[in-house]
Amino acid sequence: MRRSSIAFAFLSCLLISPALAIPAMDDLELRLQGEAKGWLDATCTYYGLGWITPDQGRKALKRLTLLLKAHYLDPEETERAKSAALSRDPQCISIWPESLQ
Image (cartoon, rainbow, N blue to C red):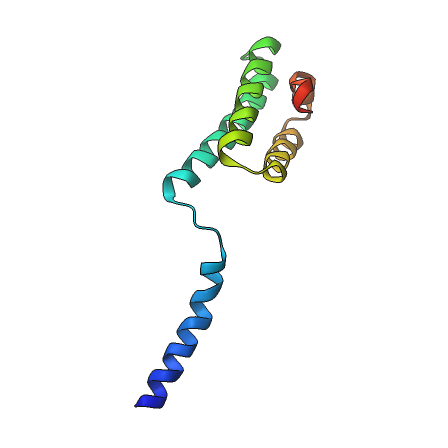
C-alpha cells in the first residue's frame, strides 16, 4: 500500500510539473489578449473591405498595437500578432503605423 502511494505521488508530480512551469495567466487576461488580437485582425479586414478609411485604420492599429505591447504581450508575441494579421490581409501594411513597423 505504501509503495503504491509513493508511486502515485511520484507520477502525480511528473504529470503536474509541466503545467506549473507555464507562467500563470488568469482567464480574464487570456480573454483580453484574444480580444485585442481579434480587433487587430478585424481592423485589417474592415480596411480591406473598404468599411473604414485609411486614417481610421491607422489610428485603430496604433491604439491596438500600443495596447498589446503595454498590457498583454511581450514584443515577440506582438510581432507574431502583426505577422498573423498581415498574412491574412497583406494590404493592411499600407495603413500600419510607421513608428510601429
